[in-house]
Image (cartoon, rainbow, N blue to C red; front, side, top):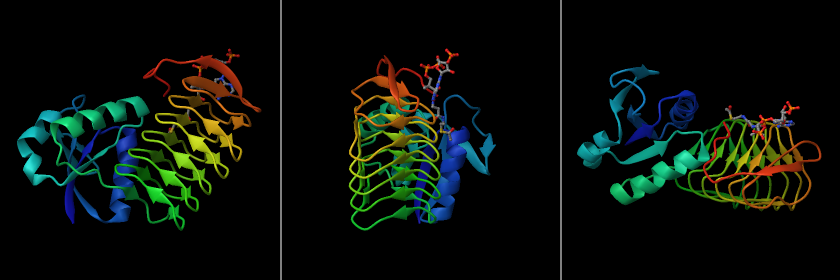
Length: 218
Ligand SMILES: CC(=O)SCCNC(=O)CCNC(=O)[C@H](O)C(C)(C)COP(=O)(O)OP(=O)(O)OC[C@H]1O[C@@H](n2cnc3c(N)ncnc32)[C@H](O)[C@@H]1OP(=O)(O)O
């Protein structure tokens, strides 16, 4: 089993830890989080410190999973780690109760939780999150750092741009393209394309406003 560290020690990290444990391929040697006390434990795993711990121990660690739910923040940490610790691997974490269909692919650092479905020939980029029960159907494309909240679903041939968040229980009908840095609100039904940096919600989903890159949404 390869040794990995987890970035983040909050609620999202707990869900990621469970997924890693169920997958059974990686040994978690600890968590890194600058905002929590060193030595505290989460599910028995010790918070070892912040990023600086990795610079000292980089040769004893195979990889890292960035367990931060906010898409912009997760991307910023990934970019920093790629520059500062280039040999660090980002394993793909897939719960054994998720389904990755024939021809589908899941990029490095992405986490696919219990009950999620990646349809035939669909592709997930790097550091994406599929929360429990979310579905991206056949031939879908999810660009890097995008996320599907619990029970969010997309029909076939949907494209989700980088950093975009599909809210809990939202539905995107087949063939729709959603741009980058969008937030689709909880329970929305998206029936028309959505351009970059847009917040949309409702049934049918309406464009509510534009948003800045990195603007908080959780
Ligand atoms: C494991 C996990 O927890 S994963 C995360 C799960 N969570 C999610 O998926 C959250 C998704 N986020 C949302 O849906 C949020 O409500 C957002 C991002 C759309 C909020 O967008 P904002 O523009 O900031 O909306 P704001 O909170 O200011 O509310 C403005 C109005 O829109 C309404 N509104 C907000 N979200 C929605 C929605 N999804 N559908 C319908 N109406 C909504 C509010 O009730 C409010 O109405 P009011 O003016 O009549 O009071």
